[in-house]
Image (cartoon, rainbow, N blue to C red; front, side, top):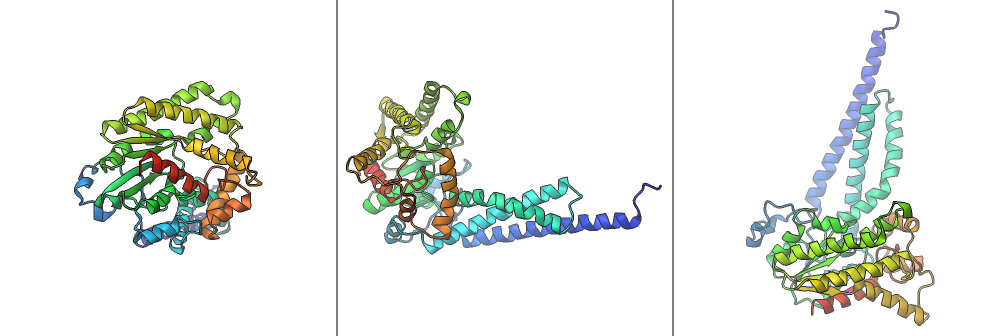
Length: 403
């Protein structure tokens, strides 16, 4: 009996457990309230259908399938599209959308982690022990939540509301297509060619080629019956994931290129089975040095993309890699290359990437300002691109789509 806890000790422990439980429920309630408010105040539905398009005849073909990985943007006029496609900072509304998404993600992750920690360690003291979990966790999660919030922003110039009007082309790809951390070349295209139907943005940040083969995204994109077909721009994240590995842990380069090529071929083949034209683009230069490893592998990926496009009937090739390298080479020849133009390195790129959302959406700097401060020619973080790329890509896709 001497070792058994006293009634007062048991009561004290139970009080601590009850206080921690109340704190966790309070945090969960905060997440719920914020989420409910964001659902009613945000002008988009991440990864889902807009209510007003669900009754459209074409939408019936898409019901029951995994939803398109795109969001709804309600640009009221071409002037709004033109403003967002310019070199100026993001609008206040766009910045507010990002702040809300960042806060929701941050609170949600911190809450879940804190609740799990409390459940695993009943000896945590309240309240200081709880604060000792929340503070470091929030600091650790903040960079990732800021980047992830960009991925949740509404797709522009158009998302799924394009179902209610003729669709010119559907673009599927990664963050370079989504345009929340990079120049949005779709908006430049929409500004240049306003009479060729709506351009639907189905880009998703951090998506590799495998991501396009999952679910029914390709079939859903084809179901929109775009007049100019589906445009595929994918491969940058595949290249990053390959080069970040040490040499001894990598797949042989030739084998890796064969796998990449087979994925492209499967993507194009699935789209062609749906009866739509396909435009396959080569991923643009990673970094700003065509002569380093990333530049050399990028050239090999471009060659694979070209071969796939030429080998499938009804598929066109868009030489985006070649266009970015041509710009770098021309700038170097004319001695106008930005003073800090340099090749890609994973460590530096990650640092610049973590800072990019804060500069674009919190400080509301323009892409041109960020690019100039880094002394870069085309990119803003050695992966995502500035406004000059928006014009280059619009030229390439405009020619490929015969706009």
